[in-house]
Amino acid sequence: MALAWRNVRKAFYMETSLGILHLCPPSSCASWISVPRLTLHTKPSMPSCDFSPERYQSLPYSRVLEIHKENLSPVQTAYFQKPLLLHQGHMEWLFDSEGNRYLDFFSGIVTVSVGHCHPKVTAVAQKQMDRLWHTSSVFFHPSMHEYADKLSALLPEPLKVIFLVNSGSEANDLAMMMARAYSNHTDIISFRGAYHGCSPYTLGLTNVGIYKTQLPSGMGCQSTMCPDIFRGPWGGSYCRDSPVQTVRKCSCSPDCCQAKEQYIEQFKETLNTSVAKSIAGFFAEPIQGVNGVVQYPKEFLKEAFALVRERGGVCIADEVQTGFGRLGSHFWGFQSHDVLPDIVTMAKGIGNGFPMAAVVTTPEIAKSLAKCLHHFSTFGGNPLACAIGSAVLEVIKEENLQKNSQEVGTYMLLKFAKLRDEFDIIGDVRGKGLMMGIEMVQDKMSRQPLPKTEVNQIHEDCKDMGLLVGRGGNFSQTFRIAPPMCITKLEVDFAFEVFRAALIQHMERRAK
Image (spheres, rainbow, N blue to C red):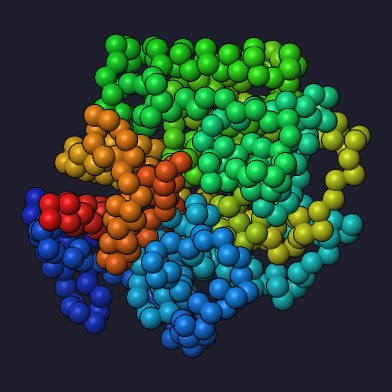
């Protein structure tokens, strides 16, 4: 059903010089109408949706606020001055307790891969729940072995041994242990701006300011300069693997990036001064997520991996946000860098929102871990998670979602790049596939982050017009956009118009 509806929308999608043709909801009209280009005070028209949510009948909003204040973590993580109380989801849409509909362009922090409550995934989950929920790995069950067979087929040799766990932090915890067990060394390097988890162990790898703590944690971890082409000291107009490059000028030729060479020298400096002569490993996200969808110069990871292996270390690709076809050109982010890691960690999109994660490595590294640790996870690889994981892989293939990520993602990046040319407060638009960052600045010349209060207001305005996007960057200055992979160009157009309207409103406030 979900695939059929998307095909109908794609078949009828068209754009004219006057505007975009939208299919109106049945309650408002029965034919196509032309929607003019956005004027200064026009609220963009939301695309139609073939789904009606149930009526919300749970806790009153005031009671939710009381319980949250009294019984849940005091750490403030919720977006918006009045946090949304979400009630139901369908594919790329979310509905709040008041019945308002939102286009989800953040996927529950880059987690909903094939769509909220995807019909096939939901049906598989319900069927498995009626059969068997839990056994733990002390017993065999077919869904775990079926899933391992499907997942291993998607990874290159020799990455064929799978450890099933429950979260990205747990996966990276285990990968750290693997690297140290195999190498018999301690030091692990990660980028500044990296996010690899919030457990006591992985906090040593995570280098985003708000996640650092004064308490002892993550011993034996060392940060190195992030090769950030936009905000770093070097970068230009040919550096990254993206349809959109920075506006920074450089003297590089298209096939030779001088910025890459400068950042490699910084990486060598870390190896020569900040870690032991032999190291355990190096963690890298193919594209940094929490730091605001930061991309590295082409060929950087290939050279960095070689340097790490010269020191006896292993190379770990953190695919928690980039994996499962989201980047479009490849199923795994590391493939877009033309590298082969020794360990791959994955979570989030693996289960479309169900708690599930995995570490995949070589037989040799897996055996080295088994010699020093009797690794066990009570819930890792449980029947329900594995059935859902298999269904997600099937949907990605059946609905050509990797191809959709490539086509719609490229369309989205090129479209939003136009806003960088129109508004001086947009410093950079970057990304690959359906993973995009829009970095807000005070002005393009200084590249200083736009004050958080101003970014907050733009964020609120997008929400008020029905668009949900995420935030990232060390100063929360970057909008992170990563919709479910079922998104269409029609919905990208709506998101573009909403974001542009929010920017216009912001400029009006500034003028006053």
